[in-house]
Image (cartoon, rainbow, N blue to C red; front, side):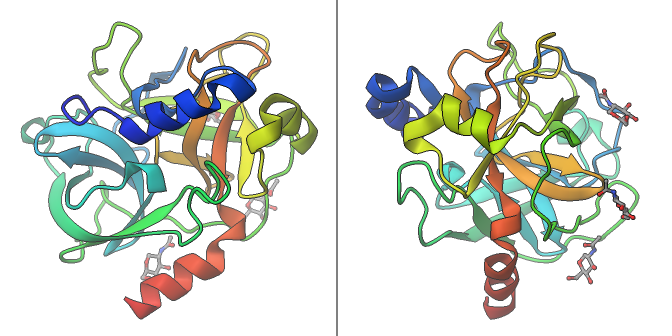
Length: 254
Ligand SMILES: *[C@@H]1O[C@H](CO)[C@@H](O)[C@H](O)[C@H]1NC(C)=O
Ligand SMILES: *[C@@H]1O[C@H](CO)[C@@H](O)[C@H](O)[C@H]1NC(C)=O
Ligand SMILES: *[C@@H]1O[C@H](CO)[C@@H](O)[C@H](O)[C@H]1NC(C)=O
């Protein structure tokens, strides 16, 4: 989100600075010590653009609906699906869709940073293919120690975007660890993952992007400490097992 910045992230990060150190939404975050994903191995991965600027990740959960973080809200979006490289013209099999209806969870940010999810309705359904596919949302809550894959195109430390989608495996952290790290803002709508000692598995992709555990969508990248990739500092993910009803009923009603 180069032009628009990430006002909510920075604003909230600023508000929360005194409480927990420098929390920030991960619009500007990046996968640390990850690697290039195998092309099109994450066919549910969406890229949200505002004009031509990439600003958040998302996940195709239905042929006409993308799930993302509520703090990625905009009035309209261009959404790229089937991308590996962020440049659509370089990606046969990609589909660029327009969207103007997005529905934030009604309790987003109540309390601060909680319930960070929204649904975005594409103007029309995508054609499902080898490179574009929806993924199911888990109903089971995560178990500490589960290994999960997070993916995204977040900015690199240099400030530049990576050429292609980045993937990294991280482990789900216990609620105790998550509470200890994020105490004042910890909420059951969140869980933590990453924070391994080797830092290889300790970071996150872009806001709104997927955390996949055992083949299902378990979390969305939400926020973390502004400095990412520190040992013992897991990132925070939207705990989607708490929202399966809301997701289903919202899609059915809209
Ligand atoms: C994709 O969406 C369709 C329509 O809702 C659904 O029937 C199908 O089960 C979904 N696929 C997965 C893998 O969730
Ligand atoms: C993540 O773990 C899975 C299962 O162990 C493995 O197949 C995959 O290559 C790993 N991916 C990355 C990017 O480390
Ligand atoms: C992973 O998913 C498969 C089926 O999708 C299931 O049979 C298995 O029990 C799951 N494993 C774990 C550890 O949840």
